[in-house]
Length: 389
Image (cartoon, rainbow, N blue to C red; front, top):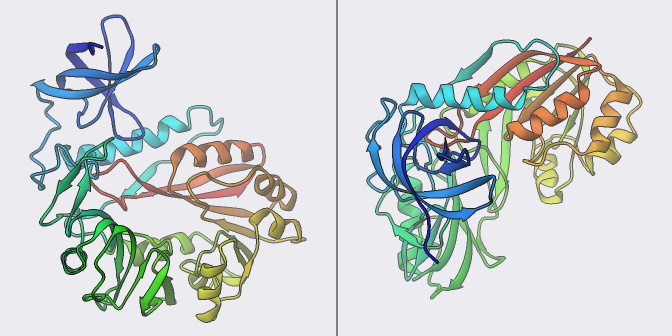
C-alpha cells in the first residue's frame, strides 16, 4: 500500500511525547518526531487515525530558527533524545507550554511556572541500552532497529564504559540497565536473549535474568541521609539536580507538621521530610520499602489508598506517584483528611493536572516549579505545592 507523502508541512506546536505538530491541507493533525515549531518539512504518514496521523520525517524543506546542531551524531535517528535538535532555551519554553496546556481547565489562577535547568552533558546517572553480539546502542524511534553507539553524550562517561565493557566481555544480546553513584559504585540489570557469561566486569553487582552476582545494592548519599538502590530500583536520573531537587521539594513543606508521605520508594524524600516534622510514610513495592527501613526510615509496606484510609488527620500530604498518577481512592482520602498543604511531585503533566483538578474545589496551587531532569527530551519533573482554600 502506497504511503501518503505530506509536502511543505509547517510545524506549529510540540506535543507531549516530543513530536512536532502540523496540519495537512485537509486540516488533519500530523505528528512528526525530530521536528520543531517553525520547521517546514516533508513527511511520510505511517499511521493514519483519520482525525490525526503519525508521520516520519523525510527531509527539512526549511529549518526553524529554533534548530541547533545536536551534540550526538546519531541524534537524528536515535529514539532517546527527542529534543536534541532544539535550542535549550526553546526546550525550556516548550516544556512550560506543554505543562500549561494540561491545565487549561484548571479554574484558579496559575502562579508563575519556574524551571530549573540542567546541562545535557553526561547528566544521566542511570540508563538503559540495547545490545547485540556484544555491541551496545539504542533503538531508532518507534522501531526495534539498533543504532550502535560508541559513546552517548548524555550518559555519565564512566557508566557507559562499564555497560559497553560488560556487553563485550559477555557477548551480550539483550537489554542492559545500569546505575552509578557519586563514588563510582554501580549495578546493572540484564535481560539477556543470549549471553556467554564470564564475569561482572567493573560493576559491583549484576542481575542477569533475575539471577544475582556480586552486590545487591549501593547507596546514594544525600544531605539528609543515604538512599539505597538495587539493580531494579527507580531513582532519579540527573546527577546535577539530584540534591537541589530533594532540598527544594522538601522545603515547600511547612515546619513542625504531621506529614504523610505516599509512594516513598526507598526514602529519597523521606529522609529530608524527617527534618520538617513527624513523618508517616508508605511504599507499595516491598524491596524499596525494605531498603528505606534499612537506612532508618520508617516506611510501611502498603498500598497508598489503604494506608491513607487508616490516617485520622495530618497537616501535610507529600506524594510522588508513578506516571499513572494517584489512584482515585487516594484523591478521595486526601479530600477527607483536608490537610493544610499538599506537595505533589510528578513526572507526568497529564496525570498531574488530572489529579489537581480533582482537588481544586478545596485547594489551589501556590507554587509550581519544573525540574529539567531530562534535557534534550520531552520529559520534565514537576514540583507543585497546593494549599487549602
